[in-house]
Length: 250
Image (cartoon, rainbow, N blue to C red):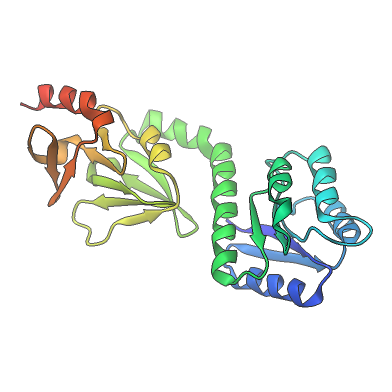
């Protein structure tokens, strides 16, 4: 998936820096860059398929915040989003009120930019997933009940759920461990989102950071289980779920 975007900043050095960061990011496409919000508005009118703005706030004539409010009134938030780039942190709350995806405080480096860009990729990926989900769901209901689809390095990958051993949730990512695979699949999603995709009769979340394939469990104690060489200790909030599993396992 490629996200079309523009950079808007009245400081040429800052503008060129953001533009260079965009060009270094594989899933971003720089459509244009401009030094005023008024010029940006014209570009948006000429290019309705632009999805993302990297937008400075303090600019002459029309501020970035004012431009954001114009965009919010005329376009669905799902169609176009904003990442603010500014030296002034007092605008953060107002920025989120107009649906900003993120707020980059100057000076920021490429690592900071990449984290914000990753949020945009995750957002628009979910938006695209909603568009294709009826097709995917139809296939799943008819012939592919044992598969889920994961976003992996800008691709949609089909994963056989029968091969899943366990799933580990990290801060912004999830690791999916598969049978006969040395390395896990790393996907940008939440554990909760992935939990909702999995069949509840085959997978259980028994810890805030783990989902386990029930048929891959090798041993249990009164408060833990072993799967694929690791021990998962059952969190207090999942005790009842674990107790139901034990009754069916023994």
